[in-house]
Length: 41
Image 1 (spheres, rainbow, N blue to C red):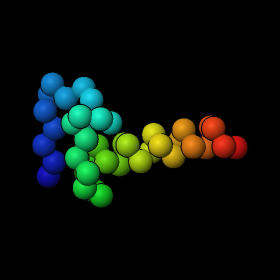
Image 2: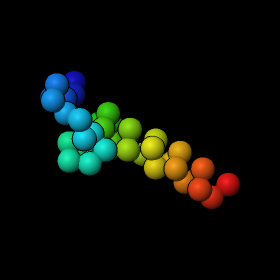
Image 3: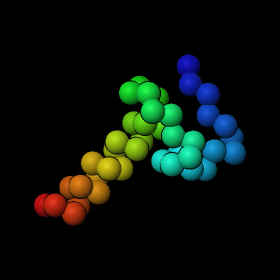
Image 4: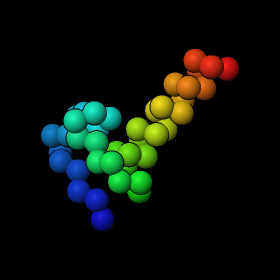
């Protein structure tokens, strides 16, 4: 189970947890993949 603070608003920066299965890491990877697709295709 993952614990996110209710006050967490920077889940892609300061509150990001760099563990492969953590929701903040998965969100980060999804955003980066989206941006790469938009920029390079």
